[in-house]
Image (tube, rainbow over all chains, first blue to last red; front, side, top):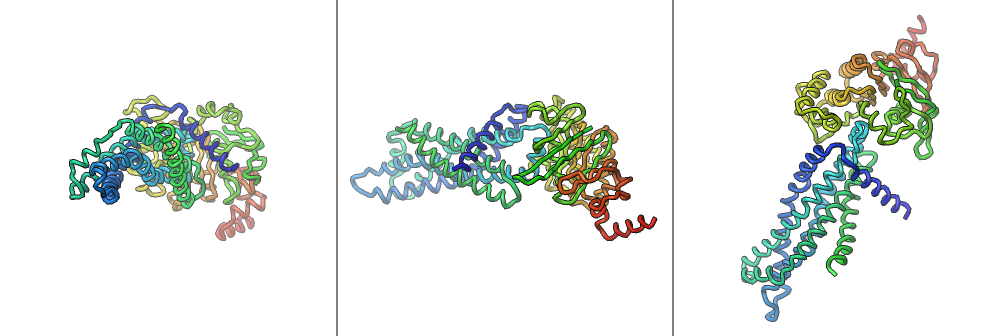
Length: 246
Length: 253
């Protein structure tokens, strides 16, 4: 229990350093643009592939499960839309990004720690925590909601492709997508993704920043970062759903 | 001048530095020597501020560094250059970007002025042909030279080097040693080098401090080290059989 509070304390201290005043805004701006490319734009292909297939599978599963003359066919489109918007495009994509981006951040910063690159920055008088972590947090919090929105569109397109394959009338599927449309659901999903982006980046950076020893420890830090980020995403998913949907 | 007095440092109850007092002189290459695990890297990192001493004081010229706040130390840190054992160049940046980084962060130079300064430093370390290369594309000697260029780009008053020759062949080691020595003289810097390389000691050791089991065991220069009457130091200096034969010849006169 004591160790848990120690970790929380160290995390808060690190975040305090991260959000202190940057040395030079122009450098941070350039680094943020670079991080948007590294952590955000480079995640588009993975998001697209997973979303299109999951969207297709959801539509297929729904068409099997909802096979009844009493249930209108458009409910398949409606169910696909709801699953994609409410949970998949934010929560599941965030867990997948925790694996891809989180491990990347933890191993990058961890390697910088054990090869003394962070010490070198500190010696120069640079706030290494802010210099390394703040642009990543800003980049992911800015870009991950776009990934979530992209995932929603691509996932629903995947479902549409399944409908086109003869599972149902594509027009019924589109009717289902438009049925009982509530724009708040999208807002809710994007808010969740913004929070998840902060959790993934800050937790992964925390484990990387305090990595010690050798490459084995960096590997461990990376694994721990992904595990803890995923658990925190689940916990905050519940909290945010309670706060925003009830 | 950098002066430390009665420095103590321990980790998890294990004493690593015990009552170290020494004065490192300006314009000279000051060497901290000792066996692996003797505490010399901890001493260097304590001097530079990466470790906080448990007790004792460190003065950078007339400023008591250990009494300064984190913000106040920043001003001194901008006058410090450090060369790490592995170079510690930023992996994701080219040589040029690495050397330019301190200028980007702490100066108001125009882009042209920064480039001119970087080119000058790279030329000084004979690396002007490699500004576009990444650290992964450099040899060990080139990494050290790029690290030296980065360390001197802001015209530091204090230069710290943690085993600058580790992993280098003897000839490249001498090149690096002489480069650090020349820069020290040229810019009148207080340079502190951490090493266990006896070639470096005999090449550039204007002031030498021998650390053993966390204590200062001996202090002198390359001119006096071979005649030192200190068993531990002699074991260190004359560790190889070749050196032992040389010592026997010295003793015979």
